[in-house]
Image (cartoon, rainbow, N blue to C red):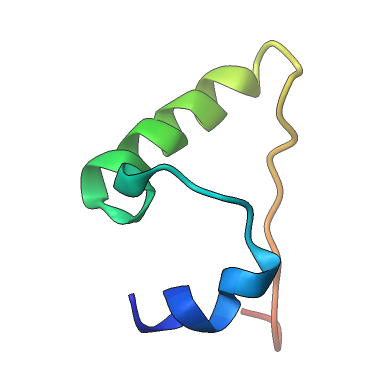
Length: 50
């Protein structure tokens, strides 16, 4: 949560529950459901080979 304010200038307006575990679980479920139908690209950002 400490980064919420630091990144706020570059973030869209998120609903209040976005930063809760439940809100993130719902977001992940939506993203995973979108992958097989082609509406979401599943990717990973790597830093220093991690």
